Image (cartoon, rainbow, N blue to C red; front, top):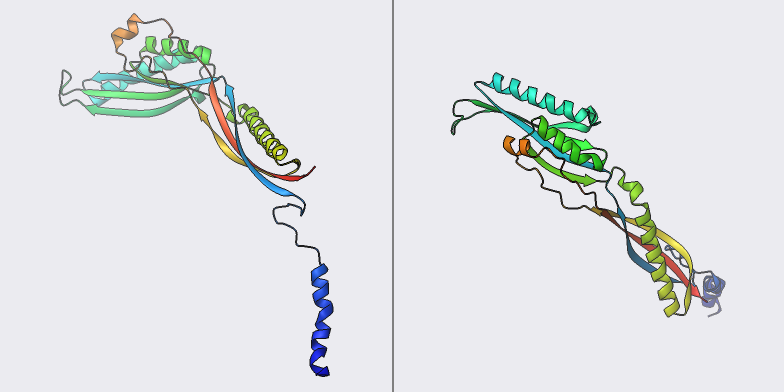
Length: 242
């Protein structure tokens, strides 16, 4: 019997040491006396758009494809000259569509129609109206837009990020006060991202014909308004006894 008890006696110090060992640290960073609080919050910021994009197009009819294309190229060159006079550069114009098609019905049956559509960016919303008027007077007969946006949404969204964190912190303080505790530390901040809620695009000057262009040489009003950027954040707080 004496020999059977010896192994158990040898293990006794190990059991005592294991019981006295400190607990493993919480992988979330929470200390034994703390409570983890996870908060999600949103913040938003209103910013005035600083650029406008719109698509404009010209079309021409010719006896053959070459004649229609040549006439259309001359119209588009006149439009580009009018836009450049207002400060629009080549970098702000992008071709969107080029088509040449034979007309098999209608008054132009047997002839060819050429179309050229480009997207234009105006880097000052206040100049968008004059740019639209100049383009239409130069020969544009189709337009879509404008679409107002912010050139640097990251910079404009910084106040939204700050508002989101402040909202999360305020909510954590409210929970802590209700529980008789205090916010001890911030353990983790996770950026969920955000979205920009744009204004609905204006449909002014859409599908215009030459008669309307000639009768409406005045620049249409383009109102910048504001765009709302909304972001979300997840924050982990450690609450501790007061």
